[in-house]
Amino acid sequence: MNLESASPTGFEATSGLTQKGEQTRARILEAALFLFMERGYDRATMREIARQAGVSLGNAYYYFRSKEHLIQGYYAQSHQDHLQACRDILEHEKNLEDRLRKVLEAKIVTSEPYHQFAGALFKTAADPSSPLSPFSPESQPTRSQATQLMAQVLDGSDVNAPDDLAAELPKLLWLYLMGVILFWIHDRSPGCARTFLLIEHTSRLVAKLIRLARNPLLRPLTHRTLEMLRDFQADDRRLTDSQDSL
Amino acid sequence: MNLESASPTGFEATSGLTQKGEQTRARILEAALFLFMERGYDRATMREIARQAGVSLGNAYYYFRSKEHLIQGYYAQSHQDHLQACRDILEHEKNLEDRLRKVLEAKIVTSEPYHQFAGALFKTAADPSSPLSPFSPESQPTRSQATQLMAQVLDGSDVNAPDDLAAELPKLLWLYLMGVILFWIHDRSPGCARTFLLIEHTSRLVAKLIRLARNPLLRPLTHRTLEMLRDFQADDRRLTDSQDSL
DNA sequence: TACGTTTATTGAACACGTTCAAGTCAGCTC
DNA sequence: GAGCTGACTTGAACGTGTTCAATAAACGTA
Image 1 (cartoon, rainbow over the protein chains, first blue to last red):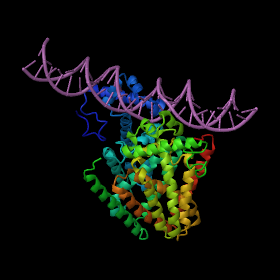
Image 2 (cartoon, rainbow over the protein chains, first blue to last red):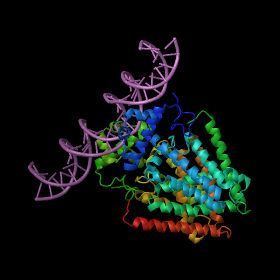
Image 3 (tube, rainbow over the protein chains, first blue to last red):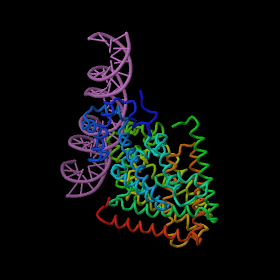
Image 4 (spheres, helix red, strand yellow):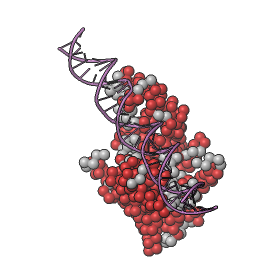
């Protein structure tokens, strides 16, 4: 029918729905959040979500391709929250260390409500064939938004990285962010204190490395690393342009 | 019975089984491998595995806690294969870059048969609460074996890292290995060529960084990083020593 | 051998995610 | 209004992983 095309991730689309349809969809999503929060992802069943939303079981599948796609709805929301929060940060902060740290901290803060079922989400997202994987084609829009954010972190800062490095850094910083999130998912410390500790330490480290990149001693290393990255991306395009689309 | 000491991960143990029990267990494992290979992890059902093994459905669950634990059986095997393969490498190779690269390559080579369902395994392993997670207490034996391996890679090499760094490096290299495996899981290129490319590039990079660690310019950076790591581990012990055992 | 205990085995039953053919409803054209 | 079309809704049915109470087999002990 409608579906696909448009909409950041391709399946949480609201386009092509009746007004009534949108309402139903929202009710289901709301019920899902409520139950996920109340008893965790695994113990919230589709039947219960449907019942709570006042619709039939099959109807939930009319709006969401699977149970996992229900999570994606919230994930997209938290992503928007993060982008919003970063606008203020990037406007007022100039120091690279602080920009980086605060952007990462904001990510954790805005993701906090989902921490308890982040494990369940990740369980699916980790599967390379899942559309929820951060590396999947379906996540490409979200991914490029995130790398653009990292580009802004660099651009408005007091550091001027060498051109060749600057071209690749946003992607690298996004990867760094993914690593932090991986840590956060496993973090069971109260208030995720350890994740914040990690951010405090590593953001400084990363910023320092970027500043050092111009240093002659490190230049060959940087150069070689960048060459490798470009290699990989060329290879990537070659592979994805061929028939093997998924 | 036999089996190397106490079974790496603690739940695929053969200990406490009758001779007949071991045979049954082996038959189930064999049938599972066959069907996983033939039609992939998802399409191989427990009923079919049981039938192929000539046992009842319930019986399979007597020997394996879940379908995923069936995979773990093979993974443990590949771990032993890797350790074996590394013995030769570490005996004949002295150059750090080569030692590191070859050990990593051996890991990929020995894991190759499991690549197609590595995604499925990882789906569970990614969940922090799963015993299959590489960070879980249950995996501790395997983990420490792997870090010991990394210590050997360093010890027998032509590089002498500063003491404070040398103390932490094995763990860091293990983490690096985990990263490579994460990449491998997502690698869909023929023969996992991209993973080998990654290893070739990054192993050189990592080795170069270790060599550079003595340099005065990087010394403060190294120092600060190590301090951070020690902080984290102290914090870790503090948290795990308390009541929160899982 | 007889008995009790542990180990091994069974298959029915359960709960869940997912599918689907069949229905209902809303808006449109004639 | 009658009829058509397509969005929406339903719940039974399917296939799956997993559990469990019951049974059988093996083993030790008197």
